[in-house]
Length: 319
Image (cartoon, rainbow, N blue to C red; front, side, top):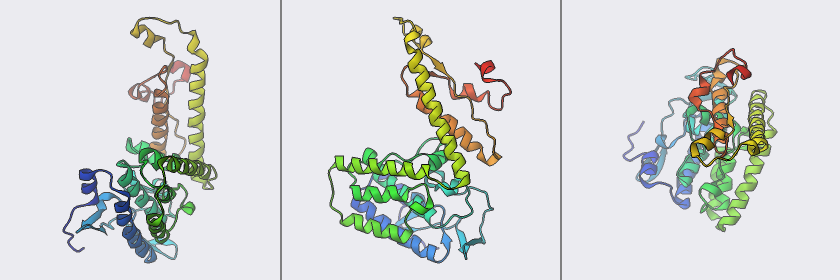
């Protein structure tokens, strides 16, 4: 590799925070075209992140192809990793990387580059939390619309970035098309923030519909798990709504805390292989976090319920 006299994009982001829209487009376009070249040569990078983007006198250079997958005639050759193994940086990992899909192609890099663009604009990645939570979110959860976390971003650029973060590979553009879309976004007129929020909201709905129509067998199981999480969340909140009137009001804060309905989210039972353990943990943590936002509901701590993982006790006995 040639020597690059400059800092990484991660260093610049840490120092300057979110970047202006025009600067983000200026950086992403040549990176997308560099990926397009690699993809034409049958190479998937698989680890696009700010640390692997170097700035040579301000110009972006894509570095570190150390975990690249080489594709020949639609199959992998000379890969450094075995099938069924997730590899990459969790924060920017495409859903098919999380699932260790052997059919991974260049659109995984497009997802990662879109995640980098999201962070450059919003000052935060699409998902945060523990590695298990982030990996689970990449597969089953739509990222917050850019219009919410970065209202100044134009609707055109927001649509390009959110489109690159589509859950299904088939819904994402190729790297070459992604570069073209970025170029078009640079020429599009800016719009008022409410319009941007409306477009982003429509895109988020489209993302949800796309996820619900998935055709992948393995991912379908994950979607069912996500549906179970939503149903459980609804049941918990409904239970709380039904029973909240039964608690006698007390003037004492401690007494009020004790009077609040309590709920424990037991660890999800894993019926798949050992490699799926992070999904069960991620769904459990996600459900706990959602329920904890209900003000009048008392949710048992993670450390408390994790003691019952792999327990033979029934829910009644645990209660």
